[in-house]
Length: 246
Image (tube, rainbow, N blue to C red; front, top):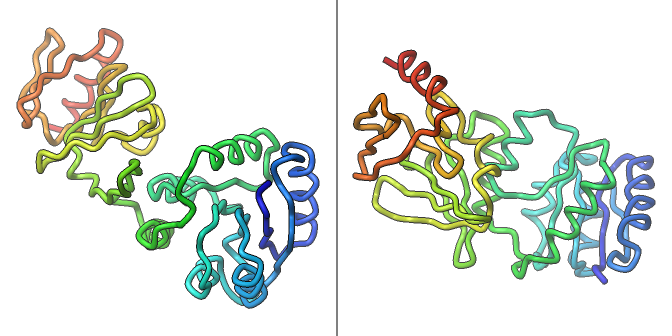
């Protein structure tokens, strides 16, 4: 079972999350403590050393980031809970940090617990937190790509194209690197959007700034010397975008 701490300053939300966890994961979750403030959260995490922490971003006299900066023990899974809107949700996605949007949906809660069971690493990288804080205050210009070897911080402009195969996606970068992540392209399509990016095919998403030429027959020549097909259903939309870009 995951020894779990809930850090939330609203009592009704703490109670609702507790009930939901009992409903969706009674055999996986053991709630060992609750915290409302930054100081209380830091003490409980360091003393009780949980396996899993649910943490609201906004707390009494501070934020979840203040907690994470002060703790000594950091070998746990973290799921942020937030009431933020779409801009902030994208910030979490760009930073590759797990979150649940309030009001929390039981099915999404169950899915989040299933996700952490697949993760071997419990330590949240400082770079991820730094990127999240930056992305919450401005339009994201970088994305974190998690692999089994490392967390790669990549500027959006460095991405030439993406190619998916099954549940994996390979990012081709301007410096020649290839980074493969174990997520399908649909997970990134909402983050890599027009006008900079365009999904030309079920298997391909490209950076339009990296295009050398394209043909009416439906082939795009990229500056990394690759040739990417445009699917029949995407041609009209692609040609319209390119006209707007000129």
